[in-house]
Image (cartoon, rainbow, N blue to C red; front, side, top):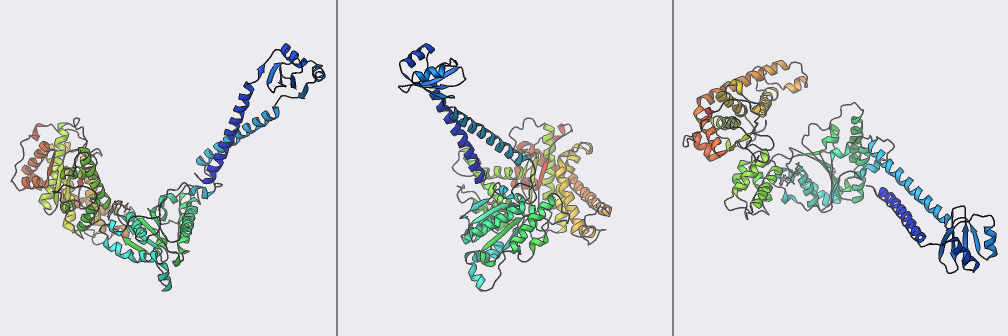
Length: 616
Ligand code: ADP
């Protein structure tokens, strides 16, 4: 709420309170008036004990005695009453006692109530109706802004991302000493964009820049600047920069810059109009920077390609820094940072954990350690054990374990077991270099029926064969269901797998020029997302998918005995780890004898998650 509004509200509250208190005291005094009979009054008047009477048309007559006490009696309303009083030496005043005060009080009260109501109604209307008349500046106060004078975070708190840190070191130096650069006539970039997947530490790094330079840090979300009311976003942008200039050297951070800086499509209407105005305001403000100001604007986005080119021109966000998912060393460093204040048991091997967390972002790793600490605390343990990490791992990738599993039918468990066994076995058969650290049929609260974690080794590129293998691993769950329960009994559990397999095969054909008949062309560029000419691509994708389906199916039929063993072990144990799986696949472990064939095939709503590598 703005200070102006708070002041108005306080004034109104004060007025109403003053009126209420006045009326209360007046009432209290009125309660002290003695009611006397007319006879008594006449006697007192004749004895000279009445000081004054207040003559009015009301049925009661008020007055005061010579000793200062007040009374009230019947009003005779006779014509000669005034004269008779005057003769007795009683002062006569026309009108009710304090009527002036009363009416003044009443007026203030009525005025107070009306003002209060009008203010309340106008507030409600302002909130609900569109208002070109509304002062945009008023809206600024409702915007969420994180303002930190001392960020308390430095580069040491950001693990990995060494290249990113290196490429912004000069900006920290510039923030510390802008004059040094101005003397040399150097034009420092006033805007830097951090781009990369969510949770990789973009916000953290922006804060660290401010922390290292020892300057204040303002953080906003891009979506706060895109409003329903045209002009409000632009006003907010101007206000942010004004505040920053008043502040002197500082870092302004815009998270999700794409919310306001998406490519413009030329049609200025409605929401677009607002967005264009906001973007223009941002561009103008950034161009108006003086390099001596010592203000650095950092923006973050998950996708650089959706941003308007104008934002990336010199003088605006002219430095773009990629913040990627951490590699094995980065993950180890992040795990170390987030276990600084956590008591880990001696047998905890963070290096191994770093190996098992391929494709985890920094935020997921932080969450992993935090969840593990919560599990350990809940157990009342003094140390965080491997088991806590295992549970946390499950929670981070699939959500919390479903505790009540009594409602899951035996058939559904069997289907899930074979489905996950299919994923795990095909991983080991086609891509033995991938680690399968966990296979489970414990359902999660997020809807996964179970999952199998398949971790490819850290690689810079992905080969065609790796992409094909990823498709086969994704299809293996459905194929295993089909082999065991029959074509008619396959379930909806494979929907995520099909989605993933389709994404990979599409990328293979459309983007990477790996299609047999489609050739070395990028079809997105060729047809600019038009639906025409898509048939050929669909045909090529289908041909690939059918081929991979057949090959995977042959593989599973050939190794059905291994599929049975893994599924039976899953049914008996619910989860199996890497060692156990390796044992079964290498023939050292045979698995318990649970007869899956006893079950009748039927409908199942189970879902399966397959954690493998992303498309690139
Ligand atoms: P982004 O802005 O890229 O979405 P954040 O900076 O908000 O990611 O990261 C969220 C949290 O994840 C951070 O507060 C931090 O705890 C953790 N984190 C992410 N990346 C790193 C990293 N490189 N080093 C240490 N912690 C990290």
